[in-house]
Amino acid sequence: MSTVREVVSDAAVGVGVAEKPEDLSVIHKPGCAAAIWWRQPLPEFQHWIAKLKPEQLPRARMILRPDGVRAAVAEVCEASGTPPSVERQRFVDDVAALADIFAGLMKVTWLRLRLDVVTTNACRKFHIDAVTARLVCTYRGTGTQYGISTDGDDPKRVFTVPAGAPILLRGTLWPETPKSGLLHRSPPIEGTGETRLLLVLDPVTDPEDEI
Image 1 (cartoon, one colour):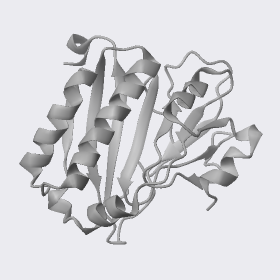
Image 2 (cartoon, helix red, strand yellow):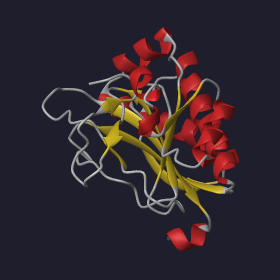
Image 3 (spheres, helix red, strand yellow):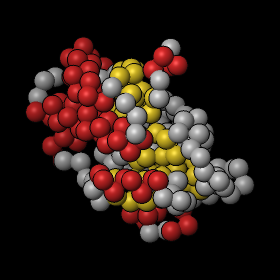
């Protein structure tokens, strides 16, 4: 596997790198199929979240406005038994910040938010999501994997996004011609004992259409 630093140096891949959150706007540039915010998670946070029992990790699926994310995620953490701490508050604040950033980039006032706890080979096949764009951030475990497919088969080179680094991916509804061929998947972890926690954000134009 290659690291994100290697893939962003390969211009043919069409993946932009952001050193700061506002640079994620590179996703709007022609030929940019994905953008990664290159950031390093704090060691204290990674130690904290790695020690949590799987049943203490927050799980959620909801549609809400960005300004309601902080309170909603705090409630989810409380209901899930995620122990109160400075690190839990840091997690809640980070999810809320990513929601604000993503909503601004997509120019929407509603989001679909998922907090998924994964222990199996969920979405193990390389694919493109049926959305305009999607933000994925893996807070615990192996990050999203991706690569370019030129013939419809699995990518020959596969890259893994580090934990804590959000990746913004164009979906099939993005008005892009020709398609980039960039595919992604959840890493195959079944049988390894690994537990992943990831945040997934999708833009929602009209929440009534989502019912």
